[in-house]
Image: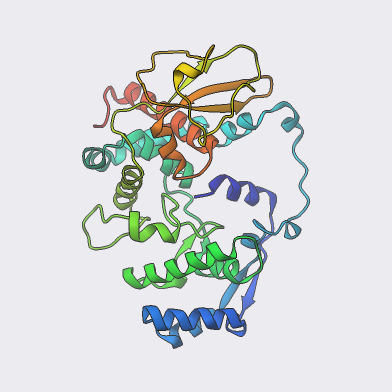
Length: 339
């Protein structure tokens, strides 16, 4: 689910760095195989074959090892852009809205069913799938087993995390009867339309089309699973997500900002919503850095829920703004809405 970082890295690194490697020569891999055989009843011969034929993923490793990346010079326009200007340019293009509207309309029955069952508005599910995989057009072309093996057994700061994800990936392929070598995903091993990490599969992926399989490449399962993920993290049906607020000046420095901090609205003097905002709980202050000023927003409990999908205030704001644009454009084009 760290899509932005992966996308930027893809733009930076233009050459593929891959070659075959026998990971069974590493002691820690043999220990890993022993544990999978002992605790999860894998066949040793099958795992040995898998780990002896790994395509080393240097591009994935470069995410965490800066020395492997080529030198990158920011474009000249970066000097006249704030960080939100750049983020917005990637995730809130008109084509993203247009495709989101068509995706929502095409799968409107599934979105409606997900809303009735989990209470998550269709536009937010559509926005997540749009940001994560461009509505299924870009689910990743990198071999997940090879990527997770590389990140698990080559030195990097997140080895422990990826070794756990590798275990969960193998367990998932065992449960779902999938060949581990046939699964493609992102640089980080995320899979499917919603780019779920393997550790999310057992808990959050649902068989929403009732075919006995859990497949994040299936649109029904993906839509249901994103809705279920939000529901399990506390999404509140019908509550707002965010509202832009006014404050004195052009740069905001008066309070700590971001989803980690909450405030009562009474304590935020000289800050007020720019439009009607029917919400009485505590709020987060979300600062978006523009070139010449800071945008400031209130984020609600549901805004925080979006950050459970990706721990970034910018990501959650992009989901919110894309969702709102999809909803508005859908009503304009089709004269109604999905519920």
